[in-house]
Image 1 (cartoon, helix red, strand yellow):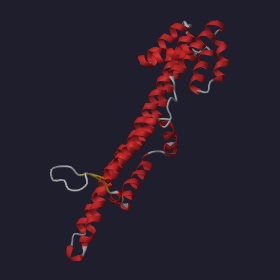
Image 2 (cartoon, one colour; image 1 turned 120 degrees about the vertical axis):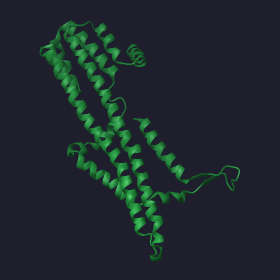
Image 3 (cartoon, one colour; image 1 turned 90 degrees about the horizontal axis):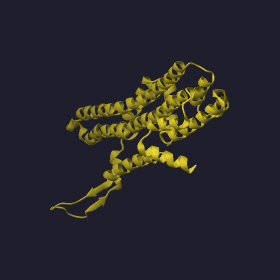
Image 4 (cartoon, helix red, strand yellow; image 1 turned 180 degrees about the vertical axis):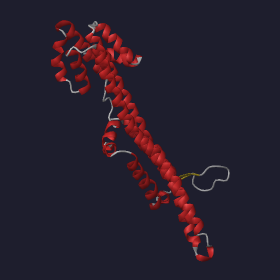
Length: 279
């Protein structure tokens, strides 16, 4: 579980709500309680018109901007960002070293059984390409093209949330204009328009607030985390490519492990060595 995302989102929301109801009365002219709570103030930040304008318009513009296949994947996107360690480089390195040992002892054809045991389609494809004795340049080209296409699909998904993150504040400004227009049209004090000035001004300001919250608390972090997950998957697939190419070339398993560990940070290398030693 990605606890950092949950802590960040819940914490930001809690601080925002606390700021809405909390009052701190300090200073030389302060009178009364130092700290006050006014839960009723939360109703000041609820406006149905603002919700329709910002949330409704943002969702429909996103629907208009992206194909249905991308929109249908939204629940999957949230499942991805809520999970940690979907792709563990150390695990892939250990498997590649094991495959290198088998290949040096029994030949490349002996890897077919191991390939059929793989749950990762990309890993299975990479192993089968060298088992079938394909040219090294061809194997690398196929696998690298697969990685590029996958990353492009992931970028399209992240771009959807970038779009929403940019559209939400824009419609917040639209809602501000709507509120100001209504306020100006109702400024005929003789006609009783003064009673609606507060409501219209509230709509004008709250829509901007809603737009900022949606952009920076919801859509922005999702887009960033999807790109982080993409980088993690790309790293593991690059390790697979280098590993299978080295296995095809008959590289020593120990040298292969040392080379693949260079893809990781020093801290992750030390943790990987500790884990491997413990097993």
